[in-house]
Image (cartoon, rainbow, N blue to C red; front, top):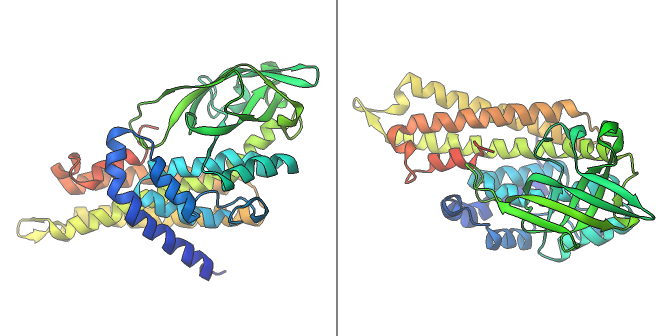
Length: 359
């Protein structure tokens, strides 16, 4: 067992950390306040090589591992998890193609993400079907050799800015998971349109919209995997992407801890820094343990993905534990800052909302 990073991974972390300090942290509050899409920052991330990390080199990507991707996402999320969400959604939109795409699909769409500054989006959730993937109602019907898609997807990250979508639809809702298929759909296809941008409580720098499909005609070449294989593609995508969410949580926890520790050493009550009060020490210790626990689960889940073990349990542990731990840590950070933690002049109120408390 060896927890040491390779030299390349150390360099990747250093690059992502420097990028976050220079580009993300100074601008995070602005994008959290306005809800604007951080297009220029993400363009710099794309040029720096911090996007599309897991796309193979043959398609212009870094050819990195799931662990590599997690290392970058923790660093970007340290600055703003909303900006990281927009960045990581490209990987999410591309993953069904990595899992089940044809060579032609990979060459067309994965290469597009690396050769052009464009975005992708993953269209699975619906108004009445989020985690219940088998309960989706978006319909696909056969028309000769073509397919026609009708339905509405909800909570789609990058929905309003994507160049293409990976979309899940069912031939018959009564068939549950056996009736689901996956398609890759260009955003400019007739009948495809994005809904209004959601005005969210958290992760406001990420673009979240509905995506609507009205009589969208698709060729057979748009089918990703077999007609009855969409549910498996979705599950394999979730297994590969859950570690990223845990890495995002790790970044939020580490930021909460560092800001709280710094403030606790400066702020004095009763003649001593509040870091000397046991109640504050307990909260800092809980944050530190939460960070180590989340990070270890994240790295174990990513390691399993990288060795070909897509067992869902570890990645589910990492996502669930990390998300809860991030929320507790961000809330405790506000408590440590006291009244100042409730104002936007101090960073922890932003850490709390940017952690995705309302998403």
